Image (cartoon, rainbow, N blue to C red; front, side, top):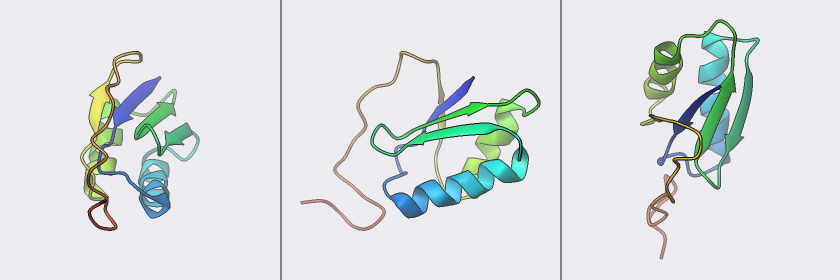
Length: 85
């Protein structure tokens, strides 16, 4: 399993964009995207982790590869839809 923390993924549109980007790399992979935790996990037999990371970056996001169990709480003070009060 490959996991990325994507702190600038803040809404449903972000999830949709990242899903589309990942499918362009491996249409047969299984994706789990947790918007609340800002975590993207991918199960793929063929996809290269770097190619997946590049696809997320090309979609306009900043993924950080993480090992399971090492995820920190994300900074929730900003949103792609405007600053939160």
